Length: 484
Image (cartoon, rainbow, N blue to C red):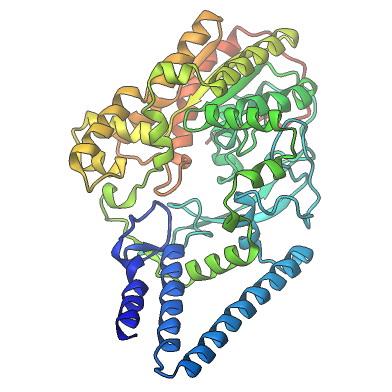
């Protein structure tokens, strides 16, 4: 019996024998992510209770203790089950941050929302029309409200008014009639994490003295952008349609969209079928959020080196290392090209010009910058494989060699089909050379400096497009005043 108790106590500390890496953007306790650390605590507690129950030499007492422990476990599970069903039937009891976590995994999308929403056909995510709220974010971290960060400076938060138009897109007001510029794409077009005047779409229209409207929506793929264009684009009769592709996930999002279309399920059901069971539980997500809130906050120092403050998403880097042939044969890539082709046809039918843009991944931009400046340590940091130097260097080499593949493939396709195409990699890399960070340090999206660099770069390229384009009828949209 004593040997059995020793074995159980050793098993209690088994999870701590395998240290886990610190995932980018996750709050941590020691070497472990918050959720993993909490699981270790639960495991250890269970093992210690089992040891206490087996501690008696009296068989009757031992049996009685084990029975009590069993009944305790059953009662806890039953209570959690009742709580789960109660929360599912009363979603108003669930805090917003827990709902957000569940929605990210698709588990909460079927519940009625307190806000009215609209669902566009062929688009996975709902829109919220006529929404108006105040947003507050860190100047260094776009998700500061979700993952709090301590700063040395107090002057780091920026508050702005976030609004949507009658169709649910992030525009400052309802825009009717023709416009000079119409933007479609995902979150790299919508830029909802920035005030309207700092988004590259507004900055570009400002520099060109043109009217514009953005029909971008975060999380969607190129085929979904096309669905939005076909539903809402014709009413605006744009002089120029700007179709933005994000190389980090758009072809893979298109893959997901194709699978969803073939499944015949609602997108909510489709997502749930792909999610682990734990990600569908409200109680578990609530527990995770509570533990993360009580975890130690990370500290960001403005004087810290780029290596310590800039983090990257491995999932995007893995995709950037793919060879051309593998990308070319992806169904999602073919769907992306088909969406561009249909957008070109739409433009011909509506007497508009088409411009395709490629937003590079954060790892792509910083990878090129690190390599050009022989910054080996930063390059290793980018790969996230610091424990194995040889593997990290091999991975970094593959990243640098292949990160331009999507750019080259899009360039080839647009040349063959006489489509105006521009990659936004050059201005972002140049801004880094000028010692200006162009992305948030623990998020994939560009900051206001990245948006400004892109807008100025595009303004030079697109001025000729508008000088050769006949005048369009006046719009009820307010023209952007020149930037002072």
